[in-house]
Image (cartoon, rainbow, N blue to C red; front, top):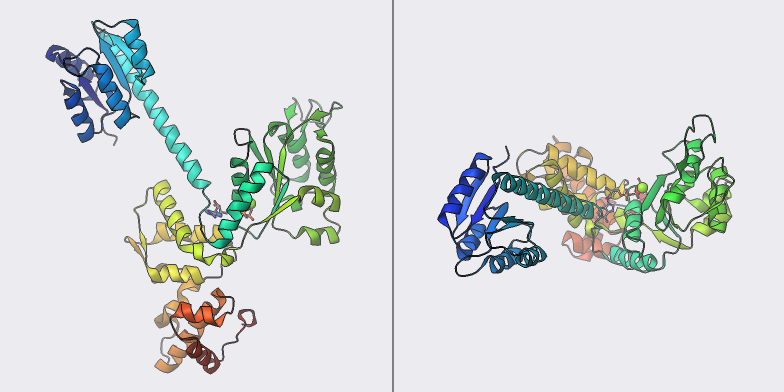
Amino acid sequence: MTRALQVLIVDDEAGIRRSLSAILDDEGYRVLTAADGAECMRAMDAEAVDLVLLDIWMEGRDGIAVLKDIKAQHPAVPVVMMSGHGTIETAVSALKLGAYDYLEKPLSLDRVTLTVEHALTESKLARENRQLKRQVENRLRMVGDSPVMQRLRAQIVRVAASCARTLITGPNGSGKELIARALHENSPRRAQPFVEINCAALPEPLIESELFGYQKGAFSGADRAKPGMFELADHGTLFLDEVGDMSLSTQARVLRVLQEGRFQRLGDTEPRAVDVWIIAATNRDLRQAIGAGQFREDLFFRLNVIPIEAPALSERRDDIPALVAHFAERAAREQGLPAKAFSPEVIQALQDAPWPGNVRELKNIVERLMILSLGNRIDIADLPDEMSAARRPAAGYAGLPLREARDLFETEHIRQALDACEGNISRAAERLGVERSNLSKKIRQLGIPPDPSGR
Ligand SMILES: Nc1ncnc2c1ncn2[C@@H]1O[C@H](COP(=O)(O)OP(=O)(O)OP(=O)(O)O)[C@@H](O)[C@H]1O
Ligand SMILES: [Mg+2]
């Protein structure tokens, strides 16, 4: 259920307060009243006011002064001014100070209700807009302060300033698309379009018509002309995602655009000039694809002016707690879930997991935990089995003698710490809170291979 909208009437004449209250009450609003500026500010501090009707000529502080206070302290609340002796200049100065509109006394019932309705609709739209914008910004936020991420951020800012062609590589779900968007948002082109095409998701014939557009009659079914993405991205950025999946014929056409800065729609003879910043991304090894004859070397060099590497999540495990908090908060907000606390053991288990699916996999797991876990705390038992087995000795070791169970647990636990520290025994010892010499001894006793890849 939505609450009734609250309108605050500020007027020093009791008669006006009463008659306006009656009108607005009939319209279904909750009405508050104030006889002067001080009462008005007190009411706004105490209650969620959605709109203020404010008299200009009042004893004491006049309406213009009160308007300034409202705009300073509650800038999002729309204010409609009222005056019996209103001059155009006062109205104009009130509007300049941020008043939504102006009503002249004697008040006409229709004008009052219409103006109030419009002001409320408009401020609701403005609020929704702000919320959407915040949501988008939040989705685009790059979380993480590890040295790897700090370097990546600095690199993004530098490359964005130059709009040099960039090829982003990196494993699945490591944030390549996010990097492409961050490049655009940090570039001088940020107010221009960001257009993306996923070359792996579209069937080959569609890719060309999407990229270059077509003229009416270019092929059967082309019953009207359509601009392609190169045109739509003019002055902006074109993101060629999964560029490694582009066919050789499309590669040849794209290469020509990059060389000449011009292209033709399918079925057109007229070349069109475009100014687009090309950012490409792939999780394939393009050099290997070149060797296999699947990717043009000349196109590779054109695209790969600046290489950017999206780091695997396992290279920046320090960021995992912040990422978990970010995705948990986002899931709570977007899905209307209550906030939940992740136990330190869960955070540790997540920091130690291998993450072949990188940030996307982490995001999915956090969302799943938020949705599926009961109560407001997420514990080891809530984790998927493969992540929690080593941390829940009782589960896998039922029936074993204590000593064997302990050895098994220690083996697994130490192995994970070593994995997390790339086999570095000193760092693993620090992480486990034991002396390096003790850890070495344990490793020998338990027969754990020193190299994590040798497991
Ligand atoms: N540093 C980060 N901070 C916050 N969210 C991130 C970060 N990196 C990636 N993500 C999120 O992880 C998910 C996967 O990222 P993205 O789609 O950019 O990866 P990708 O490398 O393009 O994946 P794929 O290889 O599957 O195309 C997205 O939801 C993205 O918002
Ligand atoms: Mg992607």
